Image (cartoon, rainbow, N blue to C red; front, side, top):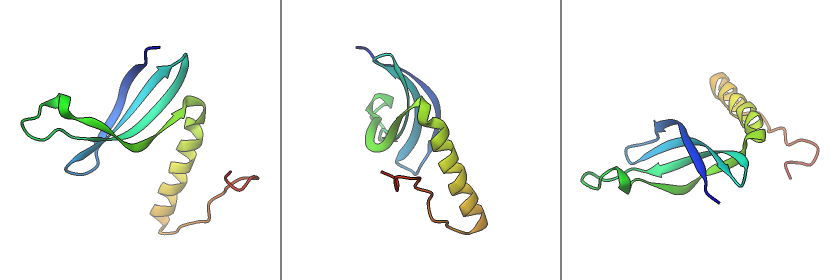
Length: 93
């Protein structure tokens, strides 16, 4: 099976890493992959950039849940507060 992927966004994390967001299809299922990439060193060329293990891959059905969680984190940061997480009926399991 061949994986299809499309780069949606990227931003600089620090001087040596970039975060890339991809939409991808694998085995007829759609996923979003948010991953830290190590940048190429000067003289290595773009091909030397590579993904790290730091990241998350979710089915697109869970993307709205991730957005809500990030929105809550952003609101907490903006208010200078940290709330207890809502882990749902199963306690986050």
